[in-house]
Image (cartoon, rainbow, N blue to C red; front, side, top):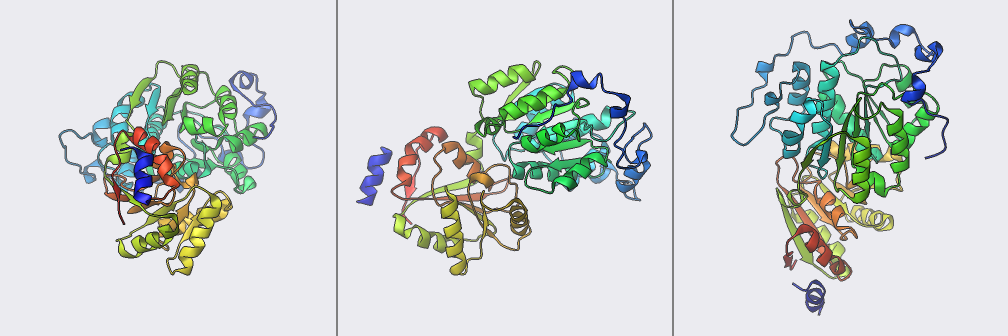
Length: 454
């Protein structure tokens, strides 16, 4: 009866104080132009020779690194980072980050971005876009230096919709910029406000990575000014639109130099009519790069769709977790209560699991991710809060305990595995309720899905 049913269904920010934007900053008083009084002047000002204290903290190793130590053979059809003529200090970070050959979004966007062009990139998460825009940002800051710098005035601003994504971008930026002397600061909601405020006020910030709401807070309190921004990066613009952040992002964009006086790197998974209007407003003659989403859903990922009745779903999940060669697994469900109950039941069955959902406070979410990333636990149960922007190496399996209501979220979920050229497995457990989502998913993926028995 269940098989017939399946066949029948499938048919085959808070208010803030006035913001110091570009026009206002031109009339900023001498007092406002000075470093904050909270610390010594030498902690803020960076001359052409550089801040000695800042340089000492980020000094290169005693034995200078040479590009000759980073050997990557030329391969037909592949683009190497060596081919981009990047500074050696950046190349050292690229080597230590494990990058050798460019992904399609990197190979197609970097040549134009390194020349200073605005970029319009359509790419899903997991395609390497973060490394693409970070490489362009770091290269620009290293090759186009400014003689005098002050605290609270970042030269590059990266805005992303979620705390997890911002923190991941910040971590990636620190890795790539490790040997450059550039200062990366990350600000998000739900974290220590005063500590983030000190990071902004007590340091010359080169790259600022932020969520819209917390950035608006610091702009309102005049702890950060955006009129010296050389590069503005907007990541996952479609998700920011969905989450209602666009008014905040408009406010942020207006506080930076106008388009044409800054470089803008604009990334979105989809180009809706609303997104296109933002592109026209915020970029100038952008170079457009499109990476088709079907690549994310199919390349390197073995997708399985297993028919199972609702009351047998949990037992089948436990069977797969015990019998499969699991390195790390993420189990996605649609609601917080489902993930919470699922995590509890798995732990009672001896399958040690951790929970990542919106009801978990930010500090605990960070610790949960670190435990999962460092291998202390290899099963994580999550809502779609983890579907975008969470980069954890070695995720061998993704389970869809429920199919998501939005087919695009399915692609983001399974994109947690099969990353950076590795192979991954995605297993979707299809019960009576999930069957209603299959036609839309098939249409989105452009392929007929093969349903299997357990």
